[in-house]
Length: 73
Image (cartoon, rainbow, N blue to C red):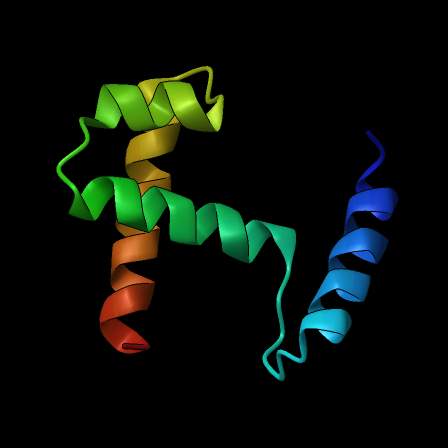
């Protein structure tokens, strides 16, 4: 599936739903990771679900995500 197809599809679905907020695929990925983390899912499992090759990548990703959430509640 091409990234441009996903962007256009998501854009159409957001408009159709009447959502006024900016919605993008990576934001949905962030929300998914944040929810997994808040539910107590292990970092190993989150790494697997996100498709990261190395656990260190997931740890950096989650740390950055947690900092951003703390800043933008």
